[in-house]
Length: 296
Image 1 (cartoon, rainbow, N blue to C red):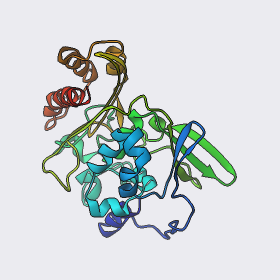
Image 2 (image 1 turned 30 degrees about the horizontal axis):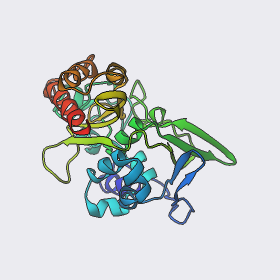
Image 3 (image 1 turned 30 degrees about the vertical axis):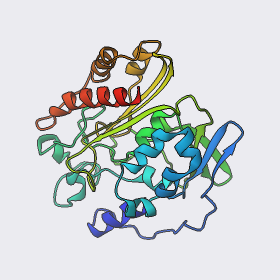
Image 4 (image 1 turned 120 degrees about the horizontal axis):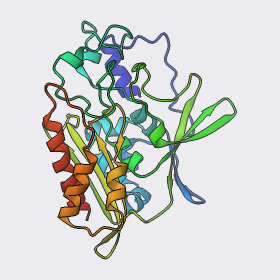
C-alpha cells in the first residue's frame, strides 16, 4: 500500500531499492460482470464507498470503509493498497525495538511489553500483531474473492485466504507471491445481505485511530427469523477474523437479543489474552451484540 509505505519509509522500517508506480494501469472499474461485481485494485476507497452499486447492494462494505482513516486518506488509498497495508504495532514501527515481523529472529517485543492493541485470536509465539484494515473486515464477511496475476497466469482466491496468521513467519502478511499483482476483488452479485447491516468500530477516538475491536454484521432475514448471518471482526487477529461458529449458531434462529448474546459468547470462545488486552474479550462480546442489534 503506497500511503502506508510512505510512513514506513519515513520511519526506516522499509528501505526499498526501487518503487514501481502502477497508478496508470487500467484497474479502476466498478462494474457488474455476469454474477459478480468486479472492483479494480486502483479504485480509491472514497469512490468505492460512495458508488451506487456498493451503497445499494453491499452497504456493509460502504459502512466499513467510511469508518477507516480520514476523508483525505480515503481519497488517496486504493482497494489493493488497503489490502496490502501492514500492522500498526508500535514495536514494528520502532526500529530500536525487537520485532520478528520487521526483522525475523529478533523476538516479539509486544508479547512481554505493552500489548493493549494486540491479538486475542490466532497469535503465535513469534507475533501478536493485528491487521489494521476496516475494509478487509467487511470483505471477508461478504465472501469476496481476490484476483491476482503473474505474467499471463491469473488466479482467484477466497478473500479469507489472502491474509495470513503469523505462525513462525510473521514477516509474511499475506499469500501474494513474488512477481504477482492484485488485479482487484469480486463480490457475489446478490441482494441477500443488502438490507440488514452494521459496522461497529470501538476505538480510543473518533478519527485517526485504529480499532481496539470492530465488528461487521450482515443478516438475511425472513420476518423475525435469521436465514443467514455474516460476521467478522477486526482488531483481534493478524488477519480479518471471520466468526463462522457464531454465524452457524444464528442460522434459522429468531433475531432476538438473547440469541445475539449467545452468538457473542460462541464467537469469543478460544480467545487468548495478554497482560494489557484482557478487556477485549468483554468489549468484543458487547460489540458483537450491538452490531447484531443494529443490523437486525
